[in-house]
Length: 234
Length: 329
Image 1 (cartoon, each protein chain N blue to C red):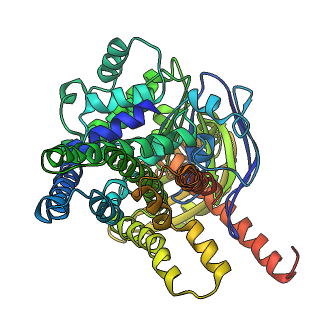
Image 2 (image 1 turned 180 degrees about the horizontal axis):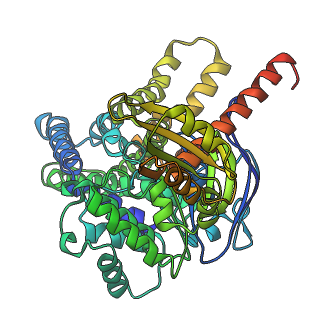
């Protein structure tokens, strides 16, 4: 597992993709931060994290789009699949590599809030709650991305597919507002990524949501393992 | 060491492997031979755990490949048809990645250097794989299989796409490796099997059509030989005279030239008879100059074709039989 993780991390920085991701992420997070706080003279941190949630749905597929698609296309997956390692550790290695990138970039870009302390009263609890929520949602996003990349060998299809699935997940909460039937609303808000996120935005540390994000991640990683297990039988 | 027991691999209605059984003992070097699409790669992919068999059992060193795939994979070094290389890595980086991927415990520096020396890639060790030529890539792929010093080595068409000099080098490397490892290699080039392997398993349409030692195969050739003779003389008399000789199975005139009266005959010998002397003396007695005599056709190449044709024919027969009794399944 360690070998694949390290190779994956190296690959981010020996190909343009890692740099591209970092540059775009810092650019967007910097702009969102400036507009949501400094320009609008507000000490409110939730706007930044809400916008970044949607940005992540578009940016994170950049990290996961080639996880398995590239391996399949270059036939290097044959090396991984015939190596003495389990499918689970192979999938987890890929997942953690992408997550490390996301974790690093999110934490580093959140350092901008240090500036805000100079100009406004910032509620540190809300800030940290939001940060944790974003890091958790990112986990689920990356798990979805890893899954999609395992079912196609085309990087573009993998990226676009992931964005599509994530946006549908996010849109559920908007759909919710127009459905008049309560039981459907109840179910939808239960599986909606965004509805779960709102608790964190208000500074509430919601254990149910924590479990939810971890479960979504685990479910998609499990599906990824099954994709490879099933391919053996095809 | 390796045992296939009634292995079947089915894709929909197509059988990529149809009830394949064979055994490879430790220390053997065996060639898996067959035309493209015969099921060679499928067999290898199943053995290495990349694919699962539809039914049947594979034992490696007595261990079931389905039951404990990771233990089995630890014993196998595999070079797939297309070497699994990461273009953005250097050879050094790649091999040390493979080293830790396989969880090796040997002395890393010494082990990798030994492998690079064996496969002659030491001089490109710090170059990016994407900049390497096909021949070097193939050798890096072989090096990958050798990492961890596994007792079993599996090479899927190791010499494909190489130039003749490289082919000779790789073959001598394979021979050297077979001293310490059990080697299974696939190829559709017969001379490769002849040059490298001690045993050959011929596979066609997912079925084994022959499984014997390379020497035995060539000996079968010696027993039933066919010659091409160029004889100057009246063709009718030559034909009738030769046909009456003992040990001659069949004589046929294949071409003739009016000017020089030189005719070319094909002569099949009876099993185990060397008819060359008979032909020589027959011609000498009649004062028909024998201007050429050469064995024809019957090298591994034509045996192979014959085996394949035979199995194709029986397959077609079986197919038509199946078609005559529809819904047999």
